[in-house]
Length: 270
Image: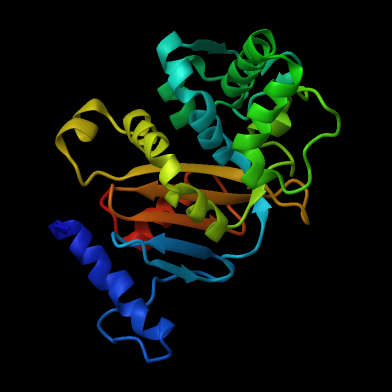
C-alpha cells in the first residue's frame, strides 16, 4: 500500500516508535509515544490493521455524542435519500438542546458536524414509526438492537417491542457505552466500510472529500461523567482512509477541547 507523505510522518512519529515498546523493547528515542495527559486514552489502527493502544483503553464510558455515528450507520443512507431537515429552536418535545438558542435549520451533515441532538432525536423517532409500519414491533426492536448492540451490554430496555426513542438513544445518560478500544474495534469492522465513507462525506467539505484523499474526517463530542454529575468527558474519532484513531478525555472544559487535543496528539494541521 502506498503511504502518502503526511501519513508516513504520523506512522514514523507515533506508530513506529510504539511497536518496539509493545514487544517489550525500549521505544526509539526519535519516535516517542504520543503526548497523552493523565487519564487520556488513545487507540489507533495503522494501514495494515495493527492496533496500538495507550492509557486505559478498556475502561467503559458513556457514548455521548458518538451515538450519532451509530445512527448514521443505521439510517444515514435513508435519511440522506429523504433529504431530512430539522429546525432546531433550542427545545423540542420538552427536550432542550445543549445550545440554548438552537442550531437553526440543519440538514444531516450540519446536524452531525454541530452535534444537534434534537435533530437526531426527531429523525430517530421518525424512523421508528417507519419501522413499526414496515416491519412490525418485534422486527423493529431487532433492527434497533442489532445496530446498537455493541454499545448496549445488557441494558436494552425490557419488553418484546420497540422501545421509545428517547434522548438516551442519542447519547444522553449511560444507556449507550463503549471503551476507547471498543469504539476502534467497531469502526474497524469491515461491515463499517459504507458508514466510514458516509462519515467522510458528511464531515468534510466537498472540496476536501473530492480532491484531498488524505483529509481526516473527525467527529468530536462530549459525554456525561457518571461519577461526577454535571461534568463532561470528551471523545474524538477520525480517519483518513488508512489510519483510524479514537481518543477519550476524562474531563473537558468545552466542546472544542476534544478536537484540539486530537489534532495536537496526532500532529494534524489545523
